[in-house]
Amino acid sequence: MTHRIAELTAPEVARRLGEGACAILPMGSLETHGPQAPMGDYLLAEALADRIAAGSGGLVLPAIPFGGEDYFGMVPGGIVLTPGLLQAVVEEVCGNLLRTGCSRILILNGHAGSIGPVDAAARSLRRRHKVLIPAMHLWRIAGALHAELGGSAESLGHGGDPVWSVARHLRPDLCHPERARTREAVPPVLGLPVANFGTVRVAGVEVSVPMEVEEVAPGGVACADSRPGSAEHGALLTTRLVEAGIATIAALKAAAP
Image 1 (cartoon, helix red, strand yellow):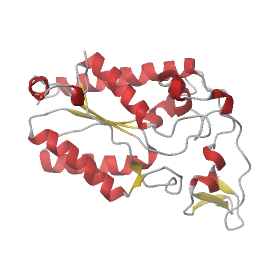
Image 2 (image 1 turned 120 degrees about the vertical axis):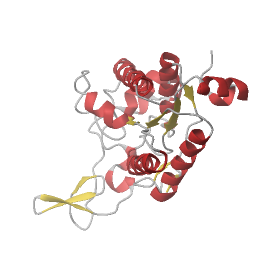
Image 3 (image 1 turned 180 degrees about the horizontal axis):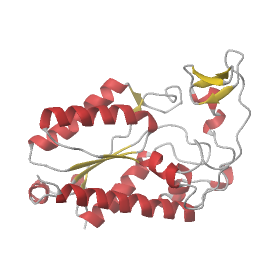
């Protein structure tokens, strides 16, 4: 049985939402994840949403494929939205659901640059509609689980895990493990060593400087070595993410409408 709203008839969707089904909104981005992984990490958020819906009776909205603007605006084929616009899109999507009888919404966000706009949208929706809309920021959660589940320290980071292992598990058809590689040397910015995405190190501290991905992670690889990522590790991460999603929806259902 499908849980995707786009594949169901309008009466079926109205009935299931009226019975209390949670609407799940997957989000992600079009960006570089290294030479080995697909650009569309929203495909992974969508696949996770399908699994969460299957375990909770939820309904899955079409994914928002464009992420909030951060370091990927100059990636060929990469599409980014300004933070204010993305916040407005999330508010409009959720607002439409609320106006038409949906009382439970869960956001699955697969892009770090969208965390701020998503959280801001959730705050605004609470103030205007008196509703709590939780958001699972997938890669922040998975990154925190990475070591606990036996992930390699070398593969943790952009262009590697957790996205890479989850992609190998959920969409192996789009992955090219033979292209996984180590990080390339990063040239200085302002004559200073690059410390992280958007920061340089000076006088023992990190100072923010606007950068593009190629200045921080040539070829999209910021981790030490993406090669240790595996489908087996991705399966462990996926299991925990799906469990958390199902449990969050259960909490929404247990709360007063």
